[in-house]
Image (cartoon, rainbow, N blue to C red; front, side, top):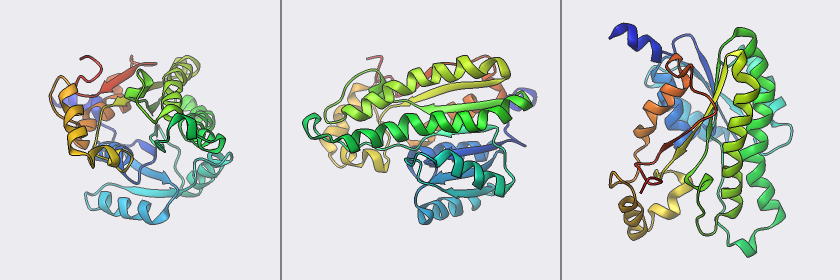
Length: 256
Protein backbone atom coordinates (compact mmCIF):
# COMPACT_ATOMS: atom_id res chain seq x y z
CA UNK A 1 0.00 0.00 0.00
CA UNK A 2 2.78 2.43 0.87
CA UNK A 3 4.45 1.87 -2.49
CA UNK A 4 1.17 2.55 -4.30
CA UNK A 5 0.63 5.69 -2.22
CA UNK A 6 3.90 7.05 -3.63
CA UNK A 7 2.18 7.34 -7.01
CA UNK A 8 -0.07 10.06 -5.57
CA UNK A 9 2.53 11.89 -3.47
CA UNK A 10 3.43 15.44 -4.48
CA UNK A 11 6.25 15.83 -2.00
CA UNK A 12 8.95 18.03 -3.50
CA UNK A 13 6.61 19.42 -6.18
CA UNK A 14 5.53 23.04 -6.59
CA UNK A 15 2.12 24.08 -7.89
CA UNK A 16 0.72 27.33 -9.24
CA UNK A 17 -3.05 27.56 -8.80
CA UNK A 18 -4.85 30.44 -10.48
CA UNK A 19 -8.12 31.36 -8.85
CA UNK A 20 -6.71 29.70 -5.74
CA UNK A 21 -8.16 32.29 -3.41
CA UNK A 22 -11.64 30.72 -3.25
CA UNK A 23 -14.07 28.14 -4.56
CA UNK A 24 -12.87 25.33 -6.78
CA UNK A 25 -9.35 26.74 -7.03
CA UNK A 26 -8.90 26.83 -3.26
CA UNK A 27 -10.30 23.32 -2.90
CA UNK A 28 -7.90 22.01 -5.54
CA UNK A 29 -4.99 23.90 -3.99
CA UNK A 30 -5.79 22.32 -0.64
CA UNK A 31 -5.73 18.86 -2.23
CA UNK A 32 -2.31 19.52 -3.77
CA UNK A 33 -0.97 20.90 -0.50
CA UNK A 34 -2.25 17.96 1.53
CA UNK A 35 -0.48 15.68 -0.97
CA UNK A 36 2.79 17.50 -0.22
CA UNK A 37 3.11 20.23 -2.86
CA UNK A 38 4.34 23.74 -2.18
CA UNK A 39 1.69 26.18 -3.40
CA UNK A 40 1.58 29.56 -5.07
CA UNK A 41 -1.95 30.97 -5.21
CA UNK A 42 -2.65 33.51 -7.96
CA UNK A 43 -5.63 35.85 -8.11
CA UNK A 44 -6.48 39.52 -8.38
CA UNK A 45 -7.35 40.43 -4.79
CA UNK A 46 -4.49 40.39 -2.30
CA UNK A 47 -6.76 40.33 0.73
CA UNK A 48 -8.55 37.18 -0.39
CA UNK A 49 -5.25 35.55 -1.32
CA UNK A 50 -3.82 36.18 2.14
CA UNK A 51 -6.97 34.87 3.80
CA UNK A 52 -6.84 31.68 1.75
CA UNK A 53 -3.11 31.28 2.37
CA UNK A 54 -3.62 31.62 6.11
CA UNK A 55 -6.22 28.85 6.09
CA UNK A 56 -3.89 26.54 4.21
CA UNK A 57 -0.91 27.39 6.40
CA UNK A 58 -2.98 26.39 9.43
CA UNK A 59 -2.88 22.89 7.94
CA UNK A 60 0.93 23.00 7.61
CA UNK A 61 0.80 23.60 3.86
CA UNK A 62 3.56 25.78 2.39
CA UNK A 63 1.93 28.68 0.52
CA UNK A 64 3.00 31.85 -1.27
CA UNK A 65 0.79 34.27 -3.18
CA UNK A 66 0.96 36.06 -6.53
CA UNK A 67 -1.47 38.98 -6.80
CA UNK A 68 -2.05 39.33 -10.55
CA UNK A 69 -5.11 40.25 -12.62
CA UNK A 70 -5.20 37.31 -15.02
CA UNK A 71 -7.52 39.15 -17.41
CA UNK A 72 -4.66 41.47 -18.38
CA UNK A 73 -2.74 40.70 -21.57
CA UNK A 74 0.60 40.76 -19.72
CA UNK A 75 -0.60 38.59 -16.84
CA UNK A 76 1.63 35.62 -17.68
CA UNK A 77 4.70 37.86 -17.67
CA UNK A 78 3.75 39.26 -14.28
CA UNK A 79 3.13 35.80 -12.87
CA UNK A 80 6.51 34.62 -14.14
CA UNK A 81 8.22 37.59 -12.52
CA UNK A 82 6.54 36.85 -9.20
CA UNK A 83 7.52 33.18 -9.39
CA UNK A 84 11.13 34.12 -10.13
CA UNK A 85 11.16 36.42 -7.10
CA UNK A 86 9.82 33.59 -4.97
CA UNK A 87 12.37 31.15 -6.38
CA UNK A 88 9.62 28.81 -7.55
CA UNK A 89 9.44 26.95 -10.87
CA UNK A 90 6.09 25.14 -10.89
CA UNK A 91 5.82 21.47 -11.71
CA UNK A 92 2.02 21.73 -11.66
CA UNK A 93 -0.23 24.41 -13.14
CA UNK A 94 -3.91 24.54 -12.27
CA UNK A 95 -5.90 27.02 -14.37
CA UNK A 96 -8.93 27.56 -12.14
CA UNK A 97 -9.49 31.32 -12.45
CA UNK A 98 -12.78 32.18 -14.11
CA UNK A 99 -15.91 34.28 -14.22
CA UNK A 100 -19.55 33.87 -15.24
CA UNK A 101 -21.44 37.15 -15.54
CA UNK A 102 -24.75 35.34 -16.22
CA UNK A 103 -26.13 37.82 -18.73
CA UNK A 104 -28.93 37.20 -21.23
CA UNK A 105 -27.52 36.56 -24.69
CA UNK A 106 -28.84 39.85 -26.10
CA UNK A 107 -27.27 41.89 -23.30
CA UNK A 108 -23.69 40.57 -23.52
CA UNK A 109 -21.25 43.32 -24.48
CA UNK A 110 -17.99 42.92 -26.35
CA UNK A 111 -16.16 43.78 -23.13
CA UNK A 112 -18.00 41.08 -21.18
CA UNK A 113 -17.34 38.49 -23.89
CA UNK A 114 -13.65 39.41 -23.97
CA UNK A 115 -13.38 39.08 -20.18
CA UNK A 116 -14.63 35.50 -20.34
CA UNK A 117 -12.24 34.52 -23.11
CA UNK A 118 -9.31 36.31 -21.46
CA UNK A 119 -9.71 34.37 -18.22
CA UNK A 120 -10.78 30.99 -19.56
CA UNK A 121 -8.61 30.74 -22.65
CA UNK A 122 -5.94 33.41 -23.08
CA UNK A 123 -4.53 33.29 -19.55
CA UNK A 124 -4.23 29.46 -19.46
CA UNK A 125 -2.69 29.42 -22.94
CA UNK A 126 -0.08 32.05 -22.13
CA UNK A 127 0.73 30.55 -18.72
CA UNK A 128 1.41 27.18 -20.33
CA UNK A 129 3.49 28.89 -23.00
CA UNK A 130 5.51 30.59 -20.26
CA UNK A 131 5.86 27.74 -17.74
CA UNK A 132 5.83 24.51 -19.74
CA UNK A 133 9.38 24.84 -21.15
CA UNK A 134 10.90 24.58 -17.68
CA UNK A 135 8.68 21.59 -16.89
CA UNK A 136 9.78 19.96 -20.15
CA UNK A 137 13.42 20.61 -19.35
CA UNK A 138 12.92 18.61 -16.14
CA UNK A 139 10.95 15.95 -18.02
CA UNK A 140 7.88 16.24 -15.77
CA UNK A 141 4.90 18.53 -15.56
CA UNK A 142 1.16 18.57 -15.05
CA UNK A 143 -1.39 21.07 -16.36
CA UNK A 144 -4.97 20.86 -15.09
CA UNK A 145 -7.61 23.04 -16.71
CA UNK A 146 -11.15 23.63 -15.52
CA UNK A 147 -13.79 22.71 -18.06
CA UNK A 148 -17.50 22.69 -17.20
CA UNK A 149 -20.82 21.02 -17.79
CA UNK A 150 -21.17 23.91 -20.24
CA UNK A 151 -18.28 22.54 -22.24
CA UNK A 152 -20.85 19.99 -23.46
CA UNK A 153 -24.29 21.55 -23.07
CA UNK A 154 -25.85 25.00 -22.88
CA UNK A 155 -27.38 26.73 -19.86
CA UNK A 156 -29.40 29.96 -19.91
CA UNK A 157 -27.67 33.35 -19.63
CA UNK A 158 -24.17 31.90 -19.95
CA UNK A 159 -23.26 32.01 -23.65
CA UNK A 160 -19.77 33.57 -23.28
CA UNK A 161 -18.98 31.31 -20.35
CA UNK A 162 -20.09 28.22 -22.27
CA UNK A 163 -18.14 29.27 -25.34
CA UNK A 164 -15.03 29.74 -23.24
CA UNK A 165 -15.46 26.42 -21.49
CA UNK A 166 -16.01 24.66 -24.78
CA UNK A 167 -12.70 26.15 -25.85
CA UNK A 168 -11.03 24.84 -22.69
CA UNK A 169 -11.65 21.28 -23.89
CA UNK A 170 -9.87 21.89 -27.18
CA UNK A 171 -7.11 23.90 -25.48
CA UNK A 172 -6.54 20.91 -23.20
CA UNK A 173 -6.07 18.69 -26.22
CA UNK A 174 -3.80 21.23 -27.91
CA UNK A 175 -1.55 21.50 -24.85
CA UNK A 176 -1.44 17.72 -24.58
CA UNK A 177 -0.44 17.41 -28.22
CA UNK A 178 2.32 19.98 -27.91
CA UNK A 179 3.87 19.01 -24.58
CA UNK A 180 3.07 15.43 -23.58
CA UNK A 181 6.02 13.98 -25.49
CA UNK A 182 8.22 16.08 -23.19
CA UNK A 183 6.69 14.66 -20.01
CA UNK A 184 4.15 17.47 -19.51
CA UNK A 185 0.61 16.15 -19.52
CA UNK A 186 -2.55 18.23 -19.70
CA UNK A 187 -6.05 17.23 -18.62
CA UNK A 188 -9.20 19.01 -17.54
CA UNK A 189 -11.74 18.54 -14.79
CA UNK A 190 -15.36 19.33 -15.64
CA UNK A 191 -17.05 19.98 -12.30
CA UNK A 192 -20.75 19.65 -11.70
CA UNK A 193 -22.54 22.05 -9.39
CA UNK A 194 -20.46 22.94 -6.34
CA UNK A 195 -21.14 25.69 -3.77
CA UNK A 196 -18.72 28.48 -4.74
CA UNK A 197 -18.92 32.25 -5.20
CA UNK A 198 -19.43 31.63 -8.93
CA UNK A 199 -22.49 29.44 -8.34
CA UNK A 200 -23.93 31.45 -5.45
CA UNK A 201 -26.97 32.55 -7.53
CA UNK A 202 -27.77 28.88 -8.17
CA UNK A 203 -27.50 27.74 -4.56
CA UNK A 204 -29.42 30.79 -3.35
CA UNK A 205 -32.46 29.25 -5.05
CA UNK A 206 -33.16 26.10 -3.01
CA UNK A 207 -35.65 24.76 -5.52
CA UNK A 208 -33.23 25.16 -8.41
CA UNK A 209 -30.39 23.58 -6.44
CA UNK A 210 -32.63 20.62 -5.61
CA UNK A 211 -33.56 20.17 -9.28
CA UNK A 212 -29.89 20.10 -10.23
CA UNK A 213 -29.13 17.56 -7.52
CA UNK A 214 -31.94 15.37 -8.82
CA UNK A 215 -30.38 15.54 -12.30
CA UNK A 216 -27.27 13.70 -11.07
CA UNK A 217 -26.97 9.93 -10.85
CA UNK A 218 -25.77 10.20 -7.26
CA UNK A 219 -28.63 12.47 -6.20
CA UNK A 220 -26.76 15.42 -4.70
CA UNK A 221 -24.73 18.43 -5.70
CA UNK A 222 -20.97 18.48 -5.22
CA UNK A 223 -19.02 19.05 -2.04
CA UNK A 224 -15.65 20.75 -2.45
CA UNK A 225 -13.81 17.75 -1.02
CA UNK A 226 -15.19 15.71 -3.93
CA UNK A 227 -12.53 17.41 -6.06
CA UNK A 228 -9.58 16.30 -3.94
CA UNK A 229 -9.08 12.82 -5.38
CA UNK A 230 -9.37 13.82 -9.02
CA UNK A 231 -7.00 16.74 -8.49
CA UNK A 232 -4.36 14.65 -6.74
CA UNK A 233 -4.64 11.96 -9.42
CA UNK A 234 -4.20 14.30 -12.38
CA UNK A 235 -1.34 16.15 -10.67
CA UNK A 236 0.66 13.07 -9.72
CA UNK A 237 2.63 10.18 -11.19
CA UNK A 238 -0.57 8.12 -11.01
CA UNK A 239 -1.80 9.83 -14.19
CA UNK A 240 1.45 9.51 -16.16
CA UNK A 241 -0.29 7.91 -19.18
CA UNK A 242 -3.38 10.12 -19.09
CA UNK A 243 -3.34 13.27 -21.21
CA UNK A 244 -5.71 15.33 -23.35
CA UNK A 245 -8.71 14.07 -21.38
CA UNK A 246 -11.67 15.66 -19.59
CA UNK A 247 -12.76 14.08 -16.31
CA UNK A 248 -16.29 15.01 -15.29
CA UNK A 249 -16.58 15.28 -11.51
CA UNK A 250 -20.31 15.86 -11.64
CA UNK A 251 -22.07 13.05 -9.78
CA UNK A 252 -23.18 11.68 -13.12
CA UNK A 253 -24.97 14.83 -14.28
CA UNK A 254 -23.83 14.42 -17.88
CA UNK A 255 -24.54 10.70 -17.86
CA UNK A 256 -28.21 11.01 -16.92
